[in-house]
Length: 431
Image (tube, rainbow, N blue to C red; front, side, top):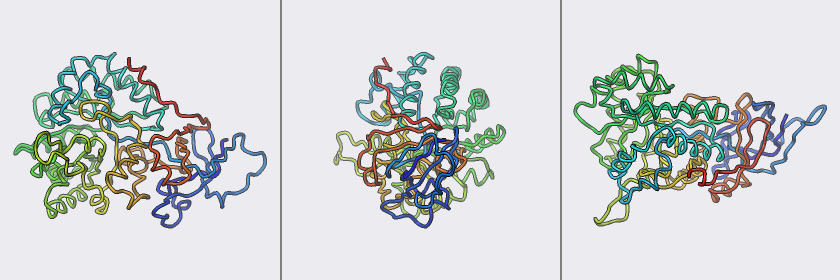
């Protein structure tokens, strides 16, 4: 048994009986004692309420002295197949259109060895930063997409027991209505996809295409995880069109939408009515603040050149309406986002700053823990509770302010009864 004493745990990830009443909005944590037996958390109690140890003391007891402790992170939207391609396929303008072009050309390099090297390194980074669940979108066109999915399946097996790796195919939504639509879906299912995915611009054909996609997903017992409205054009309303399709088709399987950027630049009444439809359709939203901040509102030589909005969706308004929201890494060191390290702690801390989540700190914690775990269908994860997997990340900070102020601080990792220092891999592994 391992006993961690005086761990400062975010109230949002604790059982209600331990979290207690509404937490301090500036310090939304509870100091707890955490008991671990084998691979599971055996007990969690407020340190002041923890019963004295009876009989023999725990074989391993560590006094954390109020160090901030998170459960293993959940990164609900990434792109492992594109990761770490920046050096050979940079996006010199930073624009979305160039990202599409340079990565389309780079795909000639995407063989098994290349994918295993880059995506494997990305997973190693995520693991050492404390992430224990990732959902990756996988570019999927026939027949080339099978190489991509096969590599992700191989990585899923290689990382089993350390990281739970989920996959979602990424293709044009219109492709599901074409002659290869069923084949694309079947390819993804063959390699263990947890949902069907895709993207689309607005078009008059979109409602029918969504009806077809929903039918294919229902036939296979899957939900959807789509890229929608990743732009600043208020006329782009794929999110609204999808919500209407889900309601029209009475589709009951989980539906997740990533990005939803254009919602932020639409008229307020339209925003409110779309959010109401999203709630009625039970759609869950993943915001990608780092990538969207980087990519959206690039202005080139026009005036003003400085971006005028942050690129992100209406996180607060969605939460106020009861829509589940997670934040995730998205792209890492590729043409869509030149930076990043699949560090969910960095994603969370920067999201707090970018989206002013300091006004709801306690709830915001769920975006990389509880809410994110629920969104990917693994509600036992992302929590510090009896029976939950014993995956913890221990930071040197002794308050939430300290934690939010040093995004790149060292950390220790707890997996079962083993405790070790995190050691992110050097970039030499990529070469």
